[in-house]
Image (cartoon, rainbow, N blue to C red; front, side, top):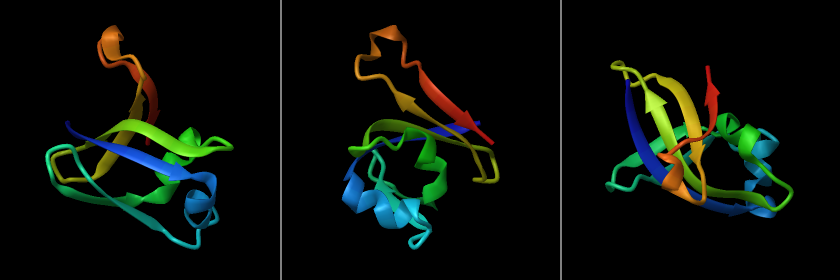
Length: 87
């Protein structure tokens, strides 16, 4: 399994078209400069009334197929643990 990190900061208003399914994919730039595109619905568990904000790690298999995502804690002193969502 491989993983790649990125940061996201979208207000509730900005995320609404993704949440409603009007826009299907999110495109971000990873911390190492790679462009990532993935289905917006994988972020639904992390959406709050204020939107979605934080550092995330996207997990994928050797065929580049999504296998999970986790949100890193604001204070990573706990070894990078966070809330996870797996398929």
